[in-house]
Image 1 (tube, rainbow, N blue to C red):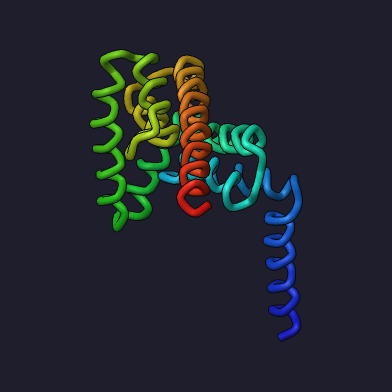
Image 2: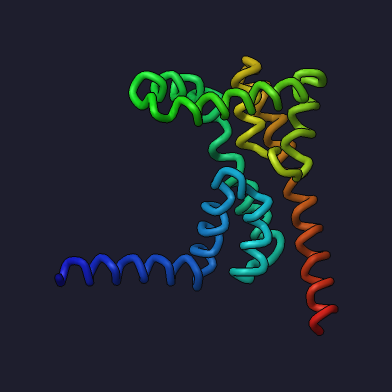
Length: 178
């Protein structure tokens, strides 16, 4: 129908805007960096390689995008999990595994408290990052005002590492192909 074609056209316009304008590329990189698991570790290479953003712009977009979910996770995740257990029991297995992951990661963080949280978020390894760090902070009952500086510092550290690795990766790739 005409309505479906109009909506499809709007979606294509949005995608085109996200890929072809400076503001769109910034926001696209920010949104990619908000995705769990991908986070800034995927956001910086995505912004630089896929969209062609300059390193500093990709860095800022990815850092902002990676930090944005953290305070909401710290404050609300336990309530969300409780709500899911009551209203959507079929997701209990998922909630159980996420809680177990938070407790397991929390043991690593708890030993060194806020410095541990900063390093946990900042060293870009599988299973680390702002999402998992915020989850661990929530289950360790870390106050938001104390956990967030560690998470922000960790995200900035991870951003610096990933920017460097992206630069090295592009140089290596262009040398091999070049």
